[in-house]
Length: 103
Image (tube, rainbow, N blue to C red; front, side, top):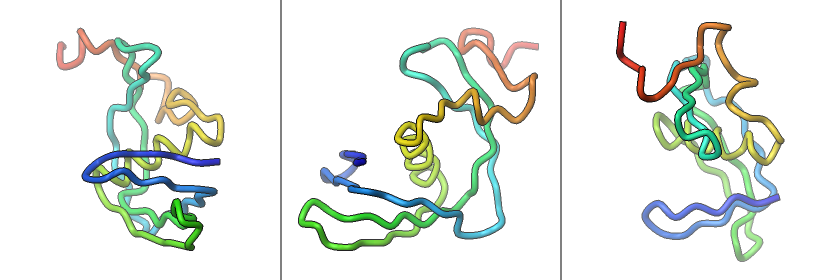
């Protein structure tokens, strides 16, 4: 398994493992590229620890927080076959992007 991201520089995360790095959580609206209008409210750990092999097969570990933590958790879910809908907080955690923010 591998995740490849290019944020500031390209980075490969080979055989990653992801663990929460604290008790704090954050609620946020997640989306699907295949359903661009659908948003799902999910709860994720605010901080996480990612252990992985880099492109040179060196063992690495990084602690992530906030937006980058959420992004890596989202991508890691894809590796595990999990879509955002499986992480919905409850039955009311779905919205259309065009209707978000309306009463």
